Image (tube, rainbow, N blue to C red; front, side, top):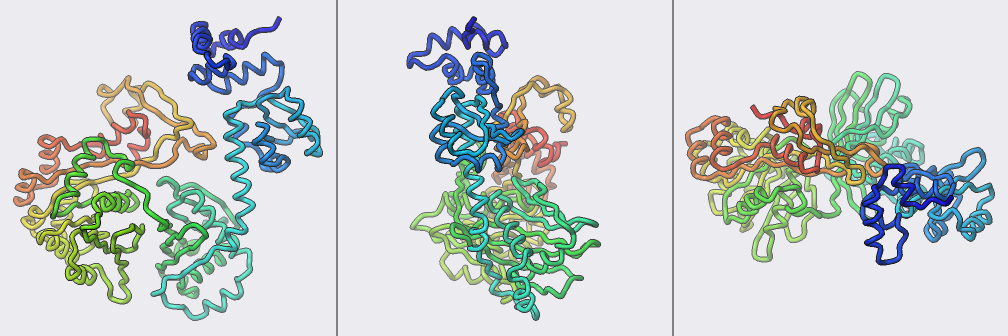
Length: 566
């Protein structure tokens, strides 16, 4: 007896009778009932496909397996055929080409497959949405892999113009010109750029050379290759960044740029001798354009209002603090993009210039030729500036000049390395600037961190337990029973459960009572106490917990990026 799809799905426990009736009542367009239930999010596509496969008496394949289709199977069928007929090959099993199809009874498609493929076909039922996504994503991946040689051959390395051309470099470069080492280094850069990596780590171990990429703030292993390749790879990196290839005992720092057809990437090179050989860390900065705004950085509504208010004041200072890689520069560029106008002269002094922003004068510091932060700032003072961005306050001289800018009618944006917003103030004073000057010019201090976003494709909700909160040293009585979220891992996020990053912020407005505390050289603990009690400042930890309970990040990420409040 033929069983209806609704009956099968109810029997399997995927939907209820009421939900089937709901789907029937809302089916005004003549769609199949299963598709209507899928549109209403009453079940998953895999559950629907499993039910249809049982109804039709055919094999089926999960969405996860379709999205992980093997390359050797994909190349058997053209992208055009797969897209037009919703049929994607996923693997070769026992001499059969297994093909996921939206309709396994479509004889025209099956006949077309048999004519174009020189091996037997086994059709399995797959979800329409997943097949469409797989065709787009998997064939794009194949195109990229076949184009990688062209990309590599068109890649151009440009060394730092201020670097010395070390003796012997050109001779070694001629020797390496067409070697596998050159191709390997080029492929390493290409893959890192495609994966959105911010850093490449080339790390010699006792028996292997490990290459890792930092993606979304976390290091992930990209490849392990024989340790015998180490010397050649390091020499190649030194050559293209014009470092001394003969020196292996001392640290070296360099810079180069990578030009491809559609982007320009600035690379900072750091070489450190270790017991197993030289370790290389490459920092990648995409300079092709800036696409952030304050709205997409992760501010909550209240902090967005505060920050937007203070960056539009006519004078004063705004300081962003945090460790390297916490997104400070990105936030400042977003602020500049917000305040720039044809009536304002905005100038930046940076090392390096991380993004190029239209309508802003940007100065690249060059220490070797005497173009330091302090020298640049003294010259900019004669350039009639309105707003100034100082990449980082590193010493007393730069701190003094920044204060003078802010006290003489200019708006100054800058960054400082500190753990939180209150300690940023005491850190500035520690540089040697008198407290009364710091208190007079500060408008706002903001600490920030970056946390990874939960992958939208595999996010799951659960009710938190006391153990969840004890693991991050929070009081379980406050939070137990609240919903928390995590990603279970899928092809979209490299099975990490995360994709992309967002900011968490601790915003300290320097109002009159805070200024008085600064004048009196109060401790950072006292400043923090008043900021929280009187001005509603939210700590980094609680900003992170708020993002976790809103389903944006996880408790594990909050623990990784912040310290508990005491």
